[in-house]
Image 1: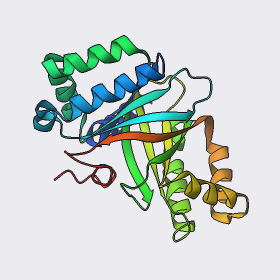
Image 2: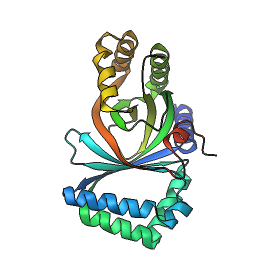
Image 3: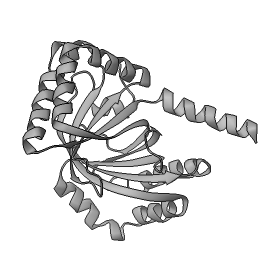
Image 4: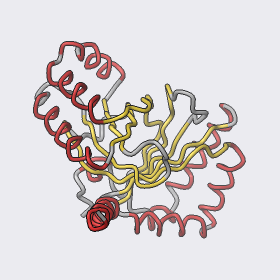
Length: 247
């Protein structure tokens, strides 16, 4: 039993630290005026020479359209090639005058809601930088069912090939959530594209098979709808992130 546990921990660690990392920093803006100040401060910081010379990833400032019981109004998604690179960037930002100014505006105009570190596993469908509307489905899967989850994702990708207009991905929650182990992220170019796809799900055999399979092996937690308010990808972009091509 001990050997099995050690093996699982080793495999989990390899998954978390060898894959690209995306971190969620959820905030509650104090007001519409505060939100505008945060956007302006983010613009100034991410277009600074400091960011151009030091940031190796992609940053998305997202606004929630539906977020359940959470007080968060926005979240920063920081997409990085590795945990090492993300740690280096955050330390350098906190030490820089540009970063200190940005974090000062953030702290004066918002409250921190949560931080979560996710390890990106795989993408499906058609990865595209044009996708700016997202649904995040949170779920809990036991270690013994993770392989079944991955197979379910591969199956629905095959079943909906040529039908599904967007992209969807699987991420493992590395740190920051007690009851959520994985995320299903689904991206669309527009709300209209999302609605068109959702309208036919009830009769789509591939999706219905996927839902039935997943219902038997995971516990669904929450679903959130958001859009990319601002994207900063001068160093890399979403397509590079999901294809794990940072060269």
